[in-house]
Image 1 (tube, rainbow, N blue to C red):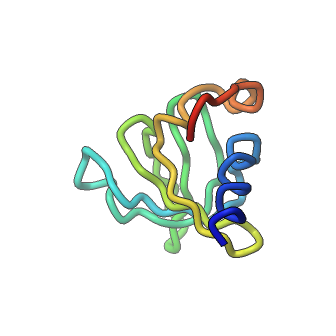
Image 2 (image 1 turned 120 degrees about the horizontal axis):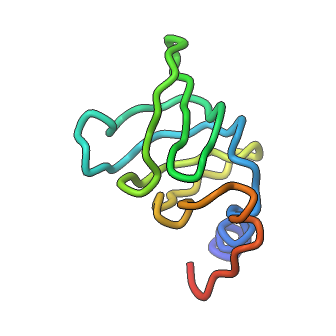
Length: 98
C-alpha cells in the first residue's frame, strides 16, 4: 500500500486539481481550517473551493495543508507550499523530495 501512495504522491503535482474533493486540515488562519468541498478554480496563490452550501471560498495555498481525495478514492495530505505557483508551471516542476 505504501508504494501505491508514493506513486500517487509523485504524480499528484502533475494532476489537475479542478474537480477534486478537498479539505483544509491545517492552517495558520483558524477560520480556514475545516473548509471542504470541490476545487473549482486555481491560481498561483489561491485555491477556490465550492462548499456544500454552494459558496465559493478562496483559500491561500501557502498557509494551509490540504487533504485531497483522488477520483480512485485515494486520500493525499499535501502541504500547500508544494502547490504554490501557477498551475501550468507546477506540471514542469521537478521535485528533489516529497
